[in-house]
Amino acid sequence: MVIVLGATVLLWQGSSRGIGPFRKAPAWLSGSIACPKFPMEHVSMPARLDVIAPCSTLSGTVRSVDRDPHDLELIILVEPDAQYANFIDSKIQRYIIVKVPPFEQPGVTVPLVDEHATFYGSWVVNRRASVKGTLELHPTWAITTEHATSAATPNAVFSVAIASPRAVVVGAPLKFTVKVKSRAHQPSEAVSEAVIYVELSGDGGVTRWAAELSNSFGVATLNLTSLEIPGVYRILVHASKGHDFGTARASVQIQRT
Image (cartoon, one colour):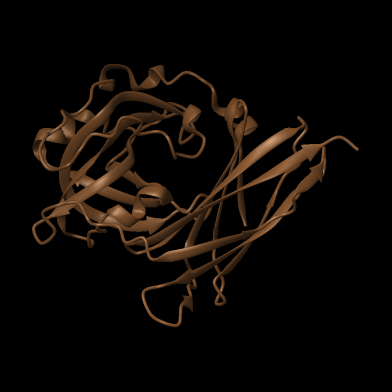
């Protein structure tokens, strides 16, 4: 299981002035791809990212595709086309880093290595990634290629069930399970290796993020670290695999003994 804590952001709140003259962004190419109103809404630990432009477009050749084992984001390294090469400092990074968070993955067609693609997302400095920070398209919510000329269509065919306690004592961990089934076929089937993304929110906004892959029975167990402030917290779960997805919500009371 992977846990990302809101408090951890403080460890990386340094200066990203090392980027210097590269604090400029590729332009947004308007068209069939929409620029979302709140692009950072479902990005884990958004405070680590300095947003240079909320919406940018760039293109290049894919050199690798991988998945971050911690937050389950897709990481795509892109050798930029000539007109985009000057947006990164080659002394710091060779490729443009494109990241697709779990919440955006159902709407994205993942390109193949050595395939040319166009990417739509937010242009940011990630202060966590290095001392000087790295430039990224993060989040990325649409990718087009020669064969996929428009954004992918997500399919809401997953049923997601949350089994969580109704109340937890202040200082105790919050443990719950998530079960994912697909309604694409009848009877519904458990979904293995589904990407489970979790947000825990209180009155002050999202305070915890977590990500985990479901097992062969379509189940993931999550154990969030203890909460010190009593109140009602909301759990949002987003499960996806390929273009299929589903969401569920629950609430839990954090109370004093």
